[in-house]
Image 1: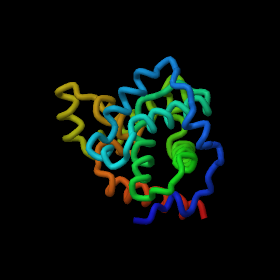
Image 2 (image 1 turned 90 degrees about the horizontal axis):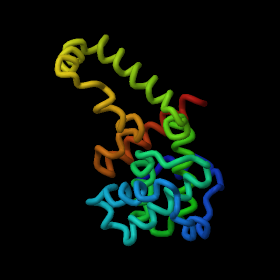
Image 3 (image 1 turned 60 degrees about the vertical axis):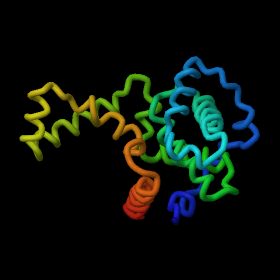
Image 4 (image 1 turned 90 degrees about the vertical axis):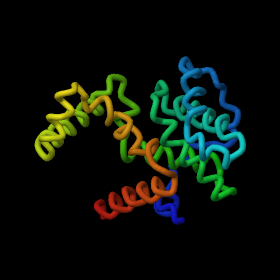
Amino acid sequence: MEVYLFNNTAPSGRGDDIKISKVQLNLPDQAVIKNDCHRTRVRESVLLPDFENILEKLLTYFCYSKNIPYKQGLNEIFGPLLLLKAKIPDLKLSKIFDFGEIFIDKYSPNFFYEKEFYSLKSALGLYKILLRYHEPSVYNRLDQYNILPEMYTTSWMMTFLSGKIGLNLLYDYWNEIIKTKDEEIR
């Protein structure tokens, strides 16, 4: 499996294996991070010994390095990247961190960095308009039962569907997003 992100994106260089492994697990929302790590990719997490602890350190280090509070959904970005270590054993945590940071900065920066979720609210509003215009019968049925887009699309948008699909399909999907986006820039 080719991981396009690892082949074509220069790492930011902010990751540091020693700092990641020794990060203090004491953020105000550390219990939330720990619980999210416990429920992230449960079936696949057995592929990597100490997955939960390593993921908790990666997420905590990310929040410290970006000076942001933890937001749920970060675990669904970093979890699959960490699980690449099961396929690529010599993959360093610093590289995983760098690529997670690049992925978030490039494809969903405002979702995780804004305090008030303005970008997410805007994206949800656009989704609602698109659904109403392109699939009015679906929109009307959901609306009839008061099923709002916020109830079922927030996790899709925050994590690029990463929590809802299998790893191999997710890697293919992310590779295609990255490849397409890189080709559009050229």
